[in-house]
Figure 1 (tube, one colour):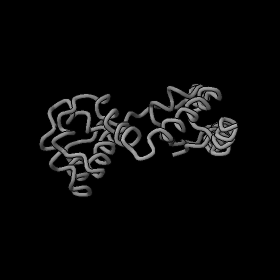
Figure 2 (cartoon, helix red, strand yellow):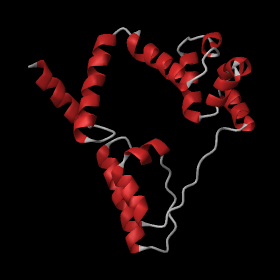
Figure 3 (cartoon, rainbow, N blue to C red):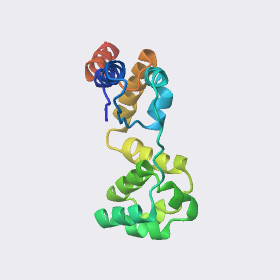
Length: 171
């Protein structure tokens, strides 16, 4: 995962150069739909060439079973999940969030009552941000990161920029 803008910029440049210098070359690039939709640079890069989109489907029953072998904590949750949650847990990101909540001590009975992404994301947010020992500091830091992302119109910000903003806010 390329989370820093400098890494992402280098990656985009590499894709562009491969496409220009070796147009006959096939290149496989994986990008989350969200990142592609939010990044003008990525969209323009992929609009230039003959790129195909391959949508990765939801996790199959066999893949969920494999996840349960790797993380047995998921077994009770998947067995007790109502259909809307079960469908949601077929998304690898949402399955990871649910597993993280389970590992944080949230009961499968509690999680199994959820029926939407918003409920699962809210519970994760509350567990990681609102109920932490340093909730106020975490909210303040996230506010600064969100402001910097908005100002720069980037999906990531560098640590030096965050630290500089923190220093300027303290003054």
